[in-house]
Amino acid sequence: MTLHALFKQFGRRVNVKKVDNTWESELYRAFIQPLRYKNKMYLEDKRVPIGIGDMSYYLYLGPAEHDLSVLDNDEFLLRSDNESFLITRAERIYIKDEIAYIWAVLKKTKEEEL
Image (cartoon, rainbow, N blue to C red):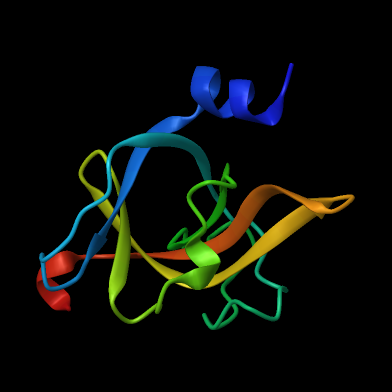
């Protein structure tokens, strides 16, 4: 099974939109899941007692044709269902010379706070 087929069959419906509401992508499917470890360098939250965690950061894996790495992070949001996420970091992941998928770290946000 290809990565594209996995996204299509098992991924959540997502889309990208500009914060100023002037543009919105079509719906597509990608994986979004909470990042559970607090010792990663890209997480800015403070340490919390064991067993309690702020689940505001998420891992994104998405299809190569929706390249979040080229977007200006301050201007775009990723949306899924009724949730909105800022793109804090995004990278292309290659297999040989082709982009296999897009990896990103997302931070949950509320659009009205932007």
